[in-house]
Image (tube, rainbow, N blue to C red; front, top):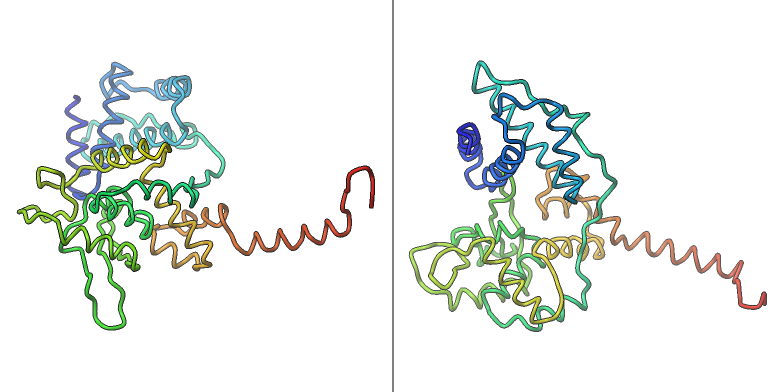
Length: 297
């Protein structure tokens, strides 16, 4: 590993200790420099062009390529503020950014959810995945959840809630409805008493890893004969609240989005008003022009 990459990782950890950015950015940089075979001071603009072409030929998703380009650009920005003889940043924003259209979040159909939770018999796992589905938690937020983050007996008139350390080191509060609250209390009643204050423990009494949580979901998916990802629970939470006509600004706060634009995509996958308007309009159009078989009016 290049020493500059390790310095960059440490810098990111100091800025956001709770974030996984340092690990992901470090992995992206190791992949890039292993492929290129050059030290960071010798990277040219044309090398970045070639890397984009190589990544596209390998079939990487556009979001993955753009993330790696953003990582590389941030890395050279770090070098510029740390070293006087830093190399020029080879990533040019308007040249090295792949444009793509609006990507809608992929949610899970309710019938699929019923089938999946029907085979989920472990109280810990049921609590974890209900927090994702009913509260919109990311898998990393479930993993980082500690006992001190739980406010399950609030004052009169307030809802039970969780205090989350979210993406990018940001914090937010999410509320618990009766279903995830009951599942969480069931798990806490049998949770082993250990030194680790993590809410969700593995069989060794230590905090579950993100991979461990994803593996548990994969096990239930195989058992139910379907496939769902952890993040799709969060997308489904967004759809459910949109269908319930929750204001988009409220949904933004519950999901922890910094930009309203990120939340508005849920209006595209399920908007009750749009559906009603469309259905009303089509009924009127069909009455005007029915298009019956055989040319009958």
